[in-house]
Amino acid sequence: METFMINSNFSNSLIVIPTPKFYYDRIITKINLRILNSIAGAGGVIYGLDRLQHISGLMKPLLSYHINGRDNTKGLIDLGLVWVENKKKENGTIIVIGLTAIGELFVTNRK
Image 1 (cartoon, rainbow, N blue to C red):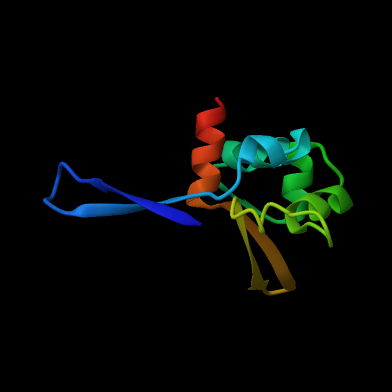
Image 2 (cartoon, one colour):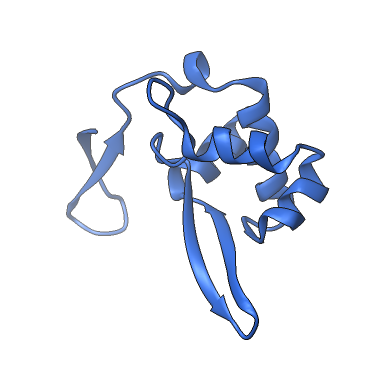
C-alpha cells in the first residue's frame, strides 16, 4: 500500500492514510460484494460460516473460495477487506470473519 499525508485539524500533526495500490471496483465481484454486505449487515463480524451462509444465501465452498482466494485469484483476505480468526470453543473451533477498516470503508462508500 502507498500512503499519503494530510494535516489534521485536531492536532498540529500530520496523519498517514494508506491508499490501496489497486482499484477495488475493478476486482470486487458481485459475490464478493454480497459477502461484504452480509458481514456489514451483521454488525461487521460474523461467528461461523454457517451464519454467513444463512445471511448471504451462498454455499460454504463458494464462501471459502471468495474469502480465501486461490492460486491466481485474490480472496477478500488477500485484498485486505476481511480478517479471519479461528476461535476455540468447548466443542471445537469456530471461524470468526470480520471487516477490516478498509472493508468497512468500501462497503460504506458503495451505499
